[in-house]
Image (cartoon, rainbow, N blue to C red; front, side, top):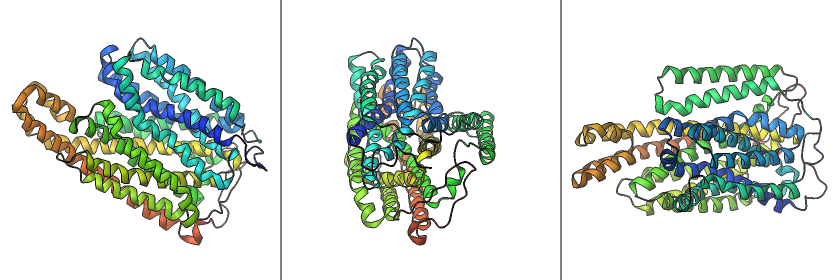
Length: 525
C-alpha cells in the first residue's frame, strides 16, 4: 500500500524551507550532547554533583534516547510524523527548561531522561519524513543537508557552552535550547507536510517493552563497563540480560501479526549493507569525539571554547564531503562512494595514529580534514540506501531501527575505545606516577588531565611526569586510532563485496512478516 503523502505528482513546494526547520531541530539536539561535556565541571561545583551523579546526568539521556527509538518510529507511522515531530520538539523544549532550573543532581538526571525522550522522537522521524517532501533525484542532497544538522553541533556545543558558562549561570547551557526549539516548532507547524502509513499499523506494546528493556540493559552494561570493569558481575549480568531480552524480542517480532519492526528488512542486501556502514561510522565517530577533546584540551592545552573552535576543520571537511557525495553517487554509484568514503575515513584514522605528544595542531588539522571528508562522503549515501529500501508506510520504524543500531555502535565505540585508551595510558604512566605524592598517584594513573594538574602543583619536578603522561596518552590514542582505521577499512571491504553482485540490485523477494509490506530496491549501486 502506498503512502499518499509520500508519493507526490509534484515536488512539495516548501521542501527546502521545511528542511531548514528539521536541520535547526537536529542542530539543537546535537548541541545538547556536546554542550553538556563542557558544563559537567561546573555542575559538580554548583550542584554538588558527585562523579557517579555526573555520569548519570550524561547516561540517562543516552539510555532513554536509544531505548525508545523503536516505539517512537512506529508511533510516527501510525499517528503522523509531523505531529510526532512537533510533540518531540515540545517535550525537548520543556525538558530543557526543567534542566535549566533543576535544584539538584537527581532532578537533573530525570530532566535529562525527558530530553532523551524528545530526541528519540525527533531524530528518526525527521529523516523518515524526507520522502514526503523530496523526489528521488533530490533526496541525496536533502539527506546530506539533514545530516549536517547533527554534525554542526559537535564544535558549536563547546564554543557556545564555553561562552555561556563564562558569562551566565550553568542553566543557560540548557535554556538556550528553548527559543531555538520554539522557532523550530513554528517552522515545523507551517512548513512540514503530514506523512503517515495509511494502514495505521497497530502499536506492538509487548515488542515496545521488550525492545526498550533490552536496549537499555545492553547499553547500560556497555556504558558502565569501562568504569566498573568488564569482569564485574553487574556489567556481565546486564549485558547478558539485554542480549537475552533482545533475542526474545526478535522471536516475538517473528510471530507478531503487527510487528514493531520488519525483520525481513535484513534479508535485503542494501539495507543490511547501509546499516553496517552507519554502525561503523558511529563506532569511529564516537571514538573520535571521545579522544579528540581530551587531546586538544590537555595535551595541546586548549580551553573548552578553544577546543570547539579547533574541531571546526572536521566539520568543514565533512560539509565538503557531503556536498560532493550525491554527485559522486550519480556518477559512479553508491557502492564505490560508500566504500570509498570508509576507505578515506580509515586513512584519516591512520593519520591520527601518527599524532605524538610532540605533534602540533597542524597534524591534527590534517587528520581532521581527511576524517571529515570520509564521513561526509559515506554517510549520506548510506542513509539514502536505507530510505530507498523502506516501504513508504514503514519509514518511521525503519529509520528508528537504523538509528538504534547506530546508538549501539556509538556506545560500543566509546566503551571499547575508552577501555583501550585507559589501559594503555595507565600502563604507560604507572612508573612515572610514583614520583607524584602518594595520595594522588591513583589519580595520575586514572586520567591525563589529573596527571597534568598534579604536574602543575609539583612545579619543575613535575615536568617529567607531564611528559610521560602526555606520551602515554598519545600512545593510547594511536592504538585506538589504528583500531578505528582497521574497522573502517574492513567495513569498506565488506560493503564493496556485498554490493558487487548484479550491480547491487536485489534478486528475488525478501521474506517479510505477515501484515507488513515488502519492498525491493532497484537502485544504481
